[in-house]
Length: 331
Image (tube, one colour):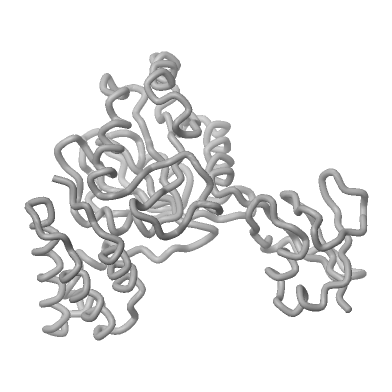
């Protein structure tokens, strides 16, 4: 039975995840318990919330080890954004995380080997993203601690095993599990998708893993007939660097952002850390990102980049393109 979580419950859950002190956690947990719909589908959730509250009241904070399982499922977001890797048993999530990051992972050939979420940092050129491998799902099982973690992410990657006889069924398993958890996997951009919504909407990239299998092309063709253009799609083999590059680019595109670099007059551009802006942002948005006072005192800018003359004069409404270098001039 679906949990059918209310907006009030989800807000209390957000406060709990953001809480810094035991008292704040207790208050949020009590609110979650009060707002949780009471029916058969939420019995386990209710018991878990009561157990967590009892541990907090006994002073067993997560740092002392008294709430270890809860702490394992709390992963602070790092980099440009957090991407949850979702998939059926043996879909290839763990191998992909290992290939794309420095995370220490154990790849096995048996199902349900991932027992808890495992984060790793992936880079697309100079932009880091946090990938999180999650416990596998099937039609009959999803870890009850997983939905709260997924709701806090910025985007998702739905991994499908192209070598598996049930690859056509795997997306349906994940979509059904997410629907029961009040989470909707959508085609969209993380930069323009509301952070708070009921159901929670999560921009999703579908990954066809094990693309070097002899039947992979046929499987992808059939998946296209089943899913249509529901999600953007990329195929990956951990043994082919070109597909890994395509995957990192697809994750970058999933966020709907552009990179812009600042430059002081008479100096070289600072390319150590780009400013990240939603696609369609303007020069005045960039100025605001650099420093609020720059936007207030903006006079004009000069830009270098694709489609621009070197040092071209820019106004506040000119659109920033990915990779632009912008030199701000203030009054």
